[in-house]
Image 1 (cartoon, one colour):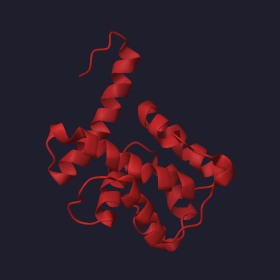
Image 2 (cartoon, one colour):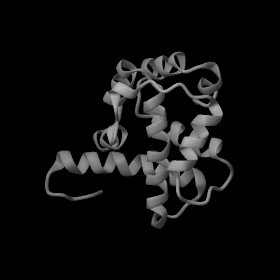
Image 3 (spheres, helix red, strand yellow):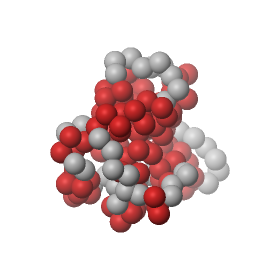
Image 4 (cartoon, helix red, strand yellow):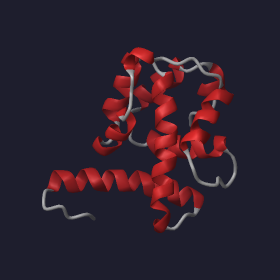
Length: 142
């Protein structure tokens, strides 16, 4: 538990740390690899956001924990979305955004992050996300 002296901030940090810990646990990474779990989260969130329509991106982002929402929207250019990309192009963007060695492959990394995120988004929104993606990309969503 983080103690910033302001309970709302403590909750935001704890929720973000919980998601990062889920990614670390899935890979068996120790806590000192927090930069890697953050890098994985960021590397998956950005191409995900960029593939969605502006409306769907905003609806998905609204359900993310507050600090993750900031990471999600960082550098976003709504006028340039949605970016059409194949499954391979999606994974290329994820890999380019993740500067660390990967245990497994990029698809496993993306699936791990998406599984951690799924717990923080309503089932209805997750179903909308799957319906919005082309079939090849929807298949990677847990």
